[in-house]
Length: 81
Image (cartoon, rainbow, N blue to C red; front, side):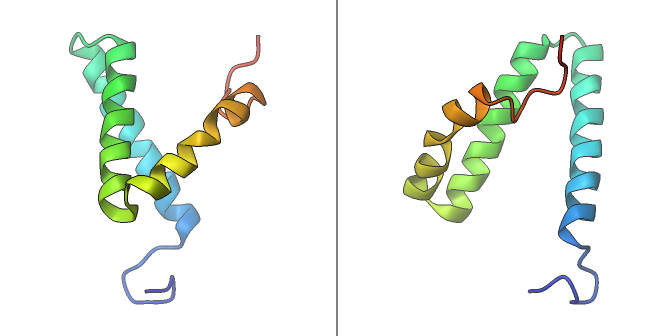
């Protein structure tokens, strides 16, 4: 299915909407007494289980094997102090 198919948003718009909704849910969980660390752990678990279901264990394992270098290079750092 391509972005031009009826009813399918472009990838960048899908990502924007998804992130907005996830961050709203994150804030709601924290507002309801969940520690941000627990929300983060749950979000990572949910993401990985979904990705494994779609792409398989080996593909996801290969992808996350690259995370340490990407993290150290600041790819996931939003706030610079």
